[in-house]
Length: 131
Image 1 (tube, one colour):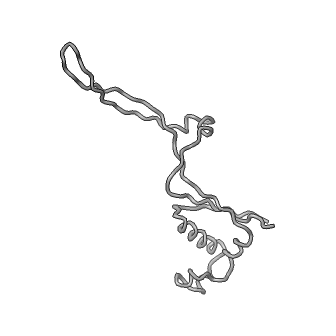
Image 2: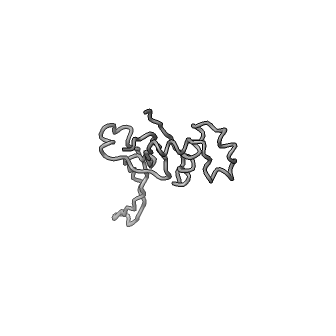
Image 3: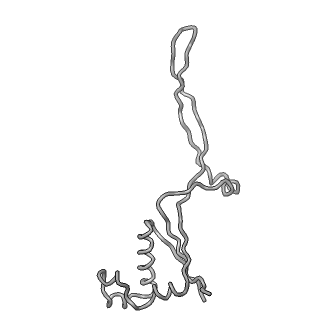
């Protein structure tokens, strides 16, 4: 059985609205207060004139959080990404010699950056789990 070695969180463009359960726990931080002036047309029967009156309108909206995708990878994927074998796409970028000089962390980040860009992500973070 494969074990999870690496967890990658990719921040995607767009957002999702916070759930009502999240907002019930901490309502002050989950809602935005909004204010708007609404122009209402009124009619005066005595003077037979119409006029506009500004009515204040206050409402709350739920905040949004950035959309994320979490990907968990096995030992084999981690070993491949940190191995000394140069991937084909890197040869045109820097060459085999440059790849071999990189640290394991740098090799992993090159792969994860490529994964993030292929998914249209804005940024990524990762955690490597111990044995």
